[in-house]
Amino acid sequence: MTFATSVELLKFHTVAYTIYALLIISVIAWFAYNLTRKEKAKTAVRIPFYGYIAFLVAGGVGHHIFTYNAIPWVSQDIMRHEIKPDYVFDIKVHDHKWKFPQLPMKVEAGKKVLFNVSTDDLTYGFGLFRQDGTLVTQMQVIPHHKNDLLWTFNECGKFNVYPTEYSGPAEYDEKGKDLMFVKDAFEVTGCDEKSAKR
Image (tube, rainbow, N blue to C red; front, side):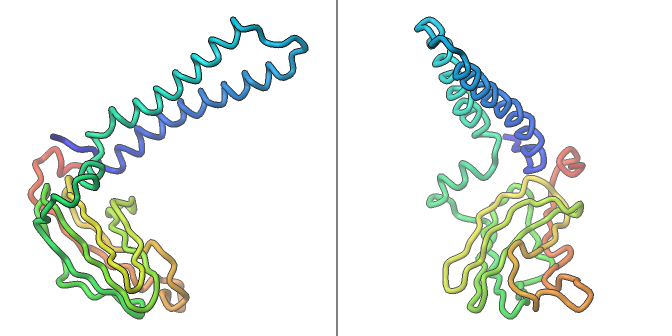
């Protein structure tokens, strides 16, 4: 099964949700128009209105049902208790510094990766980003709690680690550079040519 990347899903959902939002706005406009009318809406007019609402509900629910299998992390989250990861990376963060088990962390495409990220001082954010700056996945890292992220990489390349949660001014140097940014911290190999071009 071929899964979509988060960038492809964002493009699709942007179009789908724009259309859906315009349809909902049309319902509000229809309702507002009927409020301004002097005569009350007749029963025959109410039936199309409720039918339209039913159409919107069915469309919204149907959209998520039909895209369920295309979104790689949904089924993985639902069945997580049954999944054994192929790779486990224990990552620590303290005093605005990452401690990785190795750099770069390397995995094969299509394998399940578990990121165990722990901290004992502040709340941080752990984000994996493509080279073009688009987000692959992320999670919040809370002190003294279990913070883990199960992910399957269906695209190859090198990925940067970037904090997705502001953890205070010590995160930046005098010039405003984020000291927690780690270039090429993660590498995925083994894709076919089609996937590698993504």
